[in-house]
Length: 197
Ligand SMILES: O=c1nc[nH]c2c1ncn2[C@H]1C[C@H](O)[C@@H](COP(=O)(O)OP(=O)(O)OP(=O)(O)O)O1
Ligand SMILES: [Mg+2]
Image 1 (cartoon, helix red, strand yellow):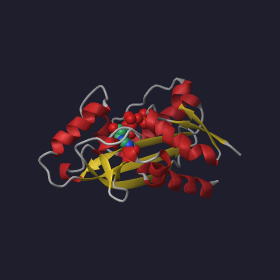
Image 2 (image 1 turned 90 degrees about the vertical axis):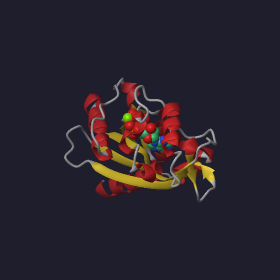
Image 3 (image 1 turned 180 degrees about the horizontal axis):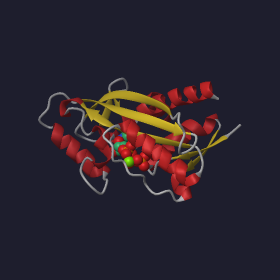
Image 4 (image 1 turned 90 degrees about the horizontal axis):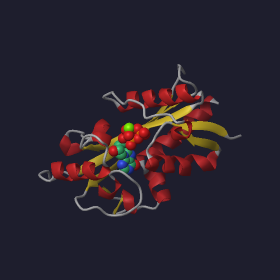
């Protein structure tokens, strides 16, 4: 049986990855934009609080179950920055180009380029769901200063994945989904939903 689900995101890169991951396993996905849901506030200092806020916001405005993703890149030499502030690292309005330029500049004087992507997903059955389903994922790599690849989104052209010798933007979509922070989190979430069903 297919399950209708609102994706509580306006990020086209995320929406594409969710469609690739969830479409084939029986979810009928609707980006929140289809319901004219505006972007939720993300005022918190933790990924999980922001994801919960986004999921509740979409569920409240649509009356449907909602899935939200809050994610970012955490750089060890920068004390975990940009982390939860990844989307607005270089200020408003959000810009991947300026975020990546700032990341490379901030790291220039550091030898340690290690980093990881983090993703937390929150699923709510309705806005006041007392049992949100939560799962997360981590994907380790390092930041390079010259972009490579045209796939993916965000920081992907600068995120080198040692196991592949490629950036996340050089991986095919299915390769990225198989190992990424988002892919890991989503498989864990689906597993939990199955157990609850
Ligand atoms: O796989 C990824 N590949 C590249 N970059 C990524 C990835 N995953 C997260 N990121 C970056 C993009 C953005 O700078 C931030 C997420 O910010 P975040 O607030 O969660 O998303 P967003 O504002 O773009 O869309 P929305 O809140 O509507 O879901 O981390
Ligand atoms: Mg956001």
